[in-house]
Image 1 (cartoon, rainbow, N blue to C red):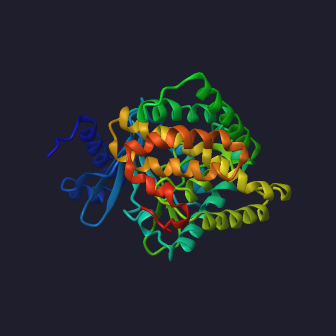
Image 2 (spheres, rainbow, N blue to C red):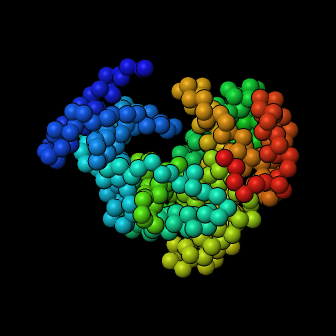
Image 3 (cartoon, rainbow, N blue to C red):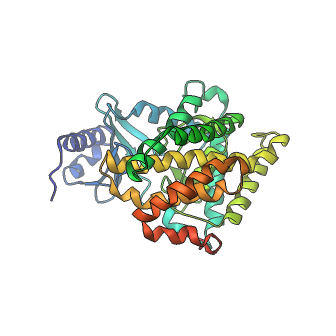
Length: 363
């Protein structure tokens, strides 16, 4: 069995101390409480569950040189004011990068999704999302913006880590220029949209079904910014871990657009633009995510994300086919990227060969 590291031991002791202060009646139980690691995510944060016979809490190790707990605390306050369900912050130590949170349990939205449950569960998720997006601008003045530089830097992860490192594609000036053309179009698309509070990773593994409740708990919101209205929606409906037929996604998008219009989050003349906003925002996100998944493997040693790369590329391929202005990206995919991808991962080729036979759910 792997021995606990020093930070893990310190977090364990700190969490016990904080709980004993908050709830002295638990002191006699805490010495015997189980302290166990939870599955990690794509960041430097580590999560643990502290469990007694009747209660449990989440302990967070967010190394301050890599993570910023103050962002988590600030966004938590904003979301609570909106009436959203987020973990309660019971204690924090910003200098050490430790937090003690209430426990939502283990029921992520992802494994609950199927053809029969999707409409209801995505309905709950979209209710939470549109509530998030109604956050008054006065609450957002201290947050960072999803500006041109951020959008651009995210997309450059695609050639750096995915094309060059993962696919071993030699980068030349022509390829760079073609990508730059795509980047500019996608940045303009993002900045044209109404700007709202953006969770930035609003998908089925960051939403939790709370027992005996029709309210979803929201986690991992520490990277929230002010940005395009379609960003979180595309994170949800073109999830990098689950795939739905295009017609169904379009139905969900249009229903959301009409609700946004009724709440004055978009203007009447923007309704016809909403689908392209959504589609092109997805292109920006999936260029970024393909790069991140490759980086997680090469830089951080997290191999599990490699299996999720084909779906991000599939989204790029299918969406770019619907827009003549994305022919440059489609050409890169067809002529250069997909042949390399299929050599590395031959099994994923069936995803691209038969787009009309997509199953409702692919896990």
